[in-house]
Image 1 (cartoon, rainbow, N blue to C red):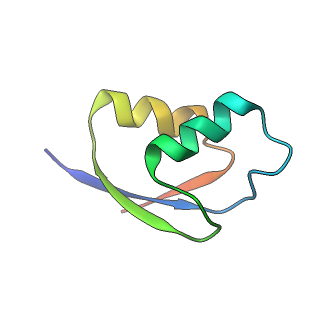
Image 2: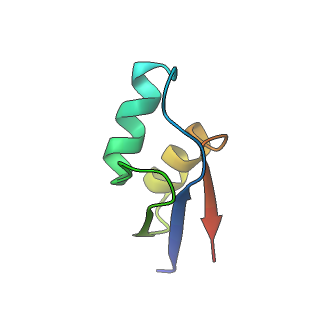
Length: 58
């Protein structure tokens, strides 16, 4: 399966708790941090939920 790199581009301050937990589940704890994941439907759904806070780096 293909891999994607997810980078946190905006702050998690004043975000709802479920979005903060989604960022934690993706492994993003700081700004400009990049993590690599398999492009599974579960991961893509999490990225879609916080798409205003992250960017996908190919």
